[in-house]
Length: 416
Image 1 (cartoon, one colour):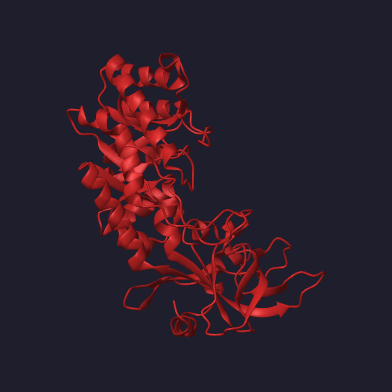
Image 2 (cartoon, rainbow, N blue to C red):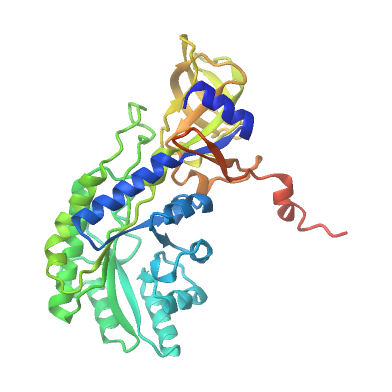
């Protein structure tokens, strides 16, 4: 975005504000979906709601036939409100209450179970409804950096692993059937070998289910985890990283699963669940300079912005790239701070940009994944969200919070 576009944006929508590059985001999603289906026709891309739960943005992605990947009742309800059929909802996560589980079972959602108590609850619901519920198992894989807290262990020997024992329980149940496998190896992963290993582990367990129980799966879900562009805090260089190629990623995953999938009679659905790699690179946070505090103790001058860690919570984990849309030639190195009274309200350190003055605009970009979802109203209201397209048009995706929109929370303890 150039200086003129940013000036117009601030004039029409204020500051701070989140900005989403709609064209870039939807192009990235379409490329992901097209590439996956070229490799394996029965592939589906389920968009991760938790990564960016902006309803207007999710609706745009559903127009491209995205499935919904949800992990809670509020997200499940949002997907249905946006017109997504239950059979196009992938339901993950460790905390699903009985009411929403019943809706998901009756609607034919792909339910991936995280723990045994959840399986028993599904079995009880299915028995009461006099039907057989199809469930998937989330596997905890022997992969470096894997989220070992979640899912069923596949430690060797495989036939005596936790996952094998749970699979036997499901197969033996009169009210359950084993529908699929799910895994999530981590987040912001750039090493494609980890995804190849993930696919190989899933294929091995799928073959085990086929040979021991005669089960041919209806779906295999490889989760998400593919990286965005912001380097982690603490790296030597804050330069934005290259966005991973979706073709290379899909080939890495599918290559490991190809033999199993090609030998199945019913062509299982291969699910991908991208989040950060779709939303992250195409979101920015626009903020305005409120003041510049002179340097002390031989440090950089501190720029005080009207957006801080309450608006960009992941700034403590990632060095989001900083862009100052200015024609100024003089450069300065600054630390960037937010507007709150917290010592930790720091957005970036030692960034060299065109010399700043009060009222100048700054874009922190690559912030489209998780920051909007995790933003909070501590001290300041949450910013609004603006969509920006290839024709240079802006539109509200969600207006900013105001006292009027939040008054029920503020005034709940008061009576007339």
